[in-house]
Amino acid sequence: MVNENSKKETNVPFEPSFFERVRCCPKTKEELDWWASELLRWSEREDSIVFYEFASIMGIPKSVLTKMSNDSENLKAAFSIAKERVGSRRERLALKNELNASIVMKTMAIYDEDFAKYERDMKLLSAEIDNKTQPINIIMQKMPETDAVPVKKAKKKKDS
Image (cartoon, rainbow, N blue to C red; front, side, top):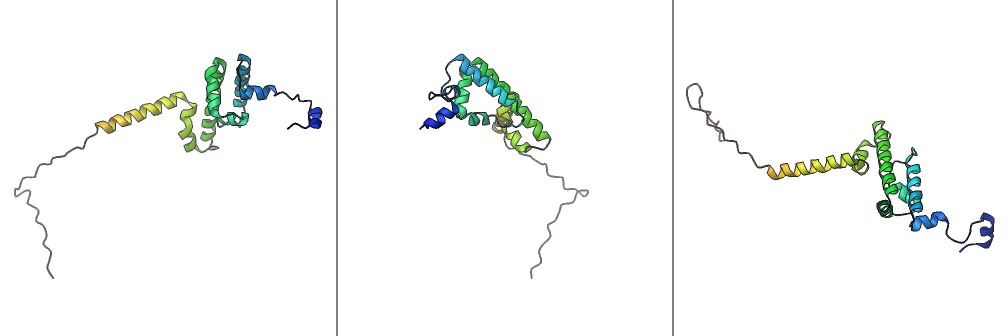
């Protein structure tokens, strides 16, 4: 409920603000372009190291952000650029030991399409190798029993 006094003090109209309307249900090209510019602006910040944090900051589920990016070419391009920026920043911070490198490595496929493709190829190759691998039977020849190669005799245990 809006307090009449606070409404007068802040000069905010009762109707939803542009941000609220755009956040809830962007429909026009201009609204989707606004999202694209906000995403790019956010991705330039040095503290932007988790891509989907943008959705959380903006108050929407990440699935909505992904769906919106499929509805607009500009937002799709911004989505890709922002992911690459964040991924590069994460990699750089991991190299400086400012981020845990093993965590960065585990999530790198989210940020880098080439790395994601490499991981998929390695999994397929590993599965192929596993399917083709069979036990190897090694057959050894018995050494000839000659004077030069005497037969090994097992030591007998002494009975007590």
